Length: 364
Image 1: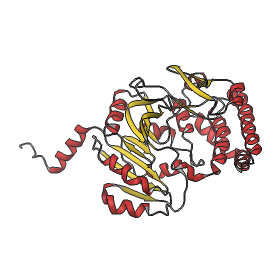
Image 2: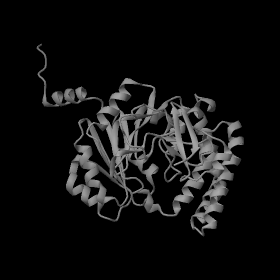
Image 3: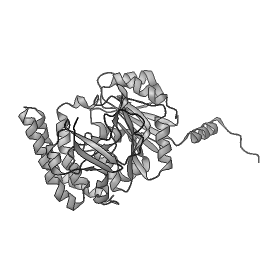
Image 4: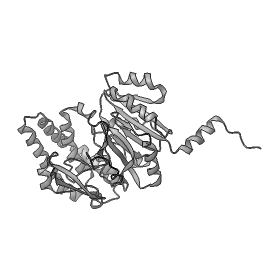
């Protein structure tokens, strides 16, 4: 018999294979209608076409869903949630709709560079050790200024710092850094890693540090991809949370240590983490800031749900392929005294080299 003639389906399939692996992009939206058009338009204009877009809507009331349906139709998949469950849990729902080899998680208040996805896929295809990555995030309103080349935590989880955040990109910031975790605004994940370590913790409203720590636990690398670029407004979506952000921060810090640290480090780091939380509560109380109330509630939430947190710890520790001594190489080099004295306006992250990140006093 002669060779079967190639059908239109076959030609489409072969074309997609030539373009690279299939990628799923999840955009989480909550009352961000004003950003949806520039965000989705930039995605649909990319120089990489083998992808799908899943828009997860956290019960918006600004007409976001109607706008997306009218203007994009079947070019995107829309998943509507009946209440605002937060960024991480919404990503988890979005992934249920995804078919891609790689998963991309985006905030709506950004625009992607035309080569954003092509560069990201190329790097992940070339290096199988990378399980989780962040692109180069530039400022939307100042496109030569870096917002983040990766996020770095200190061991007490007192707060992240962005690599080269605020610097003008003059062509010297193209190194692929190993980082603690990727900023949730633009995260790229290998699906096989997500199937191994799980998605975002469903008990958290939003915390991307935990998934980065779990990736390192499981023996995967977490890096930045400096040739994959997005332009991000920043805080446009999270600011609507208001003072409740203090609740989520206060809860996330001890939660992350309890869940992911080895026993010895758990005993050593947790009291110091709680001491830093107390410092922040006192600072807010001196300003009569209602955030102090939310921080106290966040810490009480950890006590109230300790049995659940311990269950999550047991699950996370089954992933462990990497000891903490190796994982903490991708954290900030600092100590509890510096962290107690820290105020973000007075301190900065000094990058001396790969895995050599130091918290230092800002002199200018």
